[in-house]
Length: 498
Image (cartoon, rainbow, N blue to C red; front, side, top):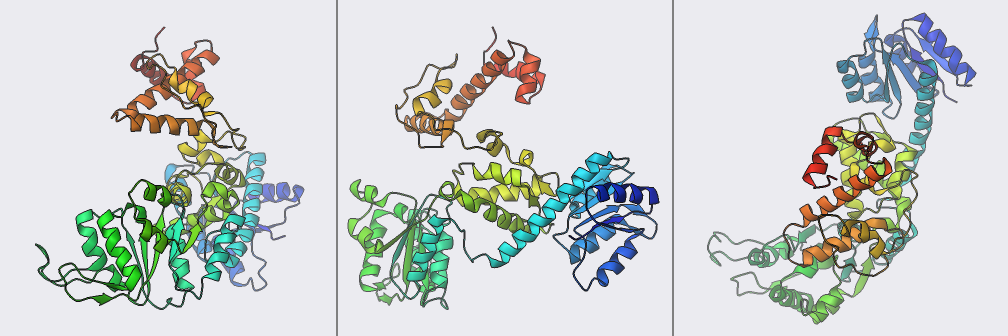
C-alpha cells in the first residue's frame, strides 16, 4: 500500500500522526517543508508516491496552499488534507478552491483526524478504480443491459444509410445516439446537422430546413442554404419531429420520397444527399390516430426504431455517468473535479430522475458549484433528491395513486380533488400521485396550480410534524429543518391556527 505523506514543520504533530496511523496499519512518510515533498515527487521513478497527502498551510520554506497547487498539477486525483492553526475563512476557501479533499483546523481531535485520513484513503482507491474504468469506458453512455441493446443496434446499422427513428423521454440522450449513429456510418466524414423542430417558430421552420431564395419574403436579402443543404453528404438530425407542423410534414415526406426539395421562393429542385435521423418523446402512433401526424411520413421515418431507455431503467449506469459529468463540469468551470462518496451515489441511484440523463448532468453541475467540500457526501445532494429519497437509500415502495394523493387532497384549505383510482408504477412512490394530481389541475385550465399544490403540500407537512410533536411548534420546526419564525409565519399564512 502506498504511504500517507505528512508535511508539517512541527515535530510533535508529525509524531502523533505517525504513531496513530501506525496503529491503523497505514504506512507513513514525513516531511518538514514543501520543498522536500516536491523533491520526493521528482525522484519518484517507481510510482510509489503518496496515497494521501496531509499538509500544514503555514510552514517555513513554503506555503501549504502553494504545495497543494503544485501537487494537484502532477497528481490531480490525489486527496490532499490541509491542516492549519489559523482556522480562518480565507484559508478554508483557498484550500477548497485549490482542490483540497478536506480542511482540518488545529488543534484537532486525533480520532476524527484519523477517520478523515481513512476516508481519504478510501476515496483515493475509488478514484484509481474510477479512472481505470473511465479510460476503458465506451464513447457512449452506459453498461446497463438496456443500453447494450442500443449499442448493438448502432453496430448493426454502422454500414447502413437507412432512416432511423429514436424514441425516448426528454433528456434521455437521443441526440447522443444520433451522433453515434453518424460517427459509425459511411457518412462519418460528412457534417452532422441537428435541428429541434419544436424550438423554432412555425413561420421560420420551413426556411430553416429548406433555405430560401433572395427576395422570397421580407428581410430575405440574400439566398440562404437550409439545414438539408448544410447536411449534404452527412446526417440531418430532426429532434422532436412529433411537433413538426402538418404542412411541413408534407414537404419532408416529399424529400424522403424522391430526394429533392425546393428552397422557399425557389423554382429549381435541389437534390438532397442526406441521411435523416428523427427523434421524439411523443407516441407517434397516437399522434397519427389523433390526426396530428401524417401516417405516410410516420412509416417513412419508422424504418428502424431505436427506443432509448429512461435513466430509471438503467440505474446501474448512474455512478459512471455522475463521475463523468463531475469531470465535465469541472473542466467547463476550470476547477478541480469533485469526487462523490458511495453513500451519495447510492442515494442518486434510487432517485427517479424525471429529467433523465440531462437532469443528472445538471445535478452534477450544481454539485460542482455548491457542494461545500471536495468530496460530495449524501447530505450535499440537492433538495429535490434528498426530499424524494428515504435516508436508507432504498427505493420507495409502490403506492396506489389514490393513497398517494389522499394526503394532498384533504387539507383544511382545499376540498378533496377527484382522484384517479389507478395503481402507480412500481417504485414511483408519492411523486407519481403528485404528478397525476398536477396533470389533472393543469388540464382543467387553472392558472394557480403552483400555489394550490404548494399550499396543500406545506399544510400537510406542517400538520404532520405538529401531530408528531403534540403541537409543540419549536420542536416541529426543528424536525422539519426550518426556523421557528418560519413555521409560525407559515401556520398563519396557511390558516392552520387552532
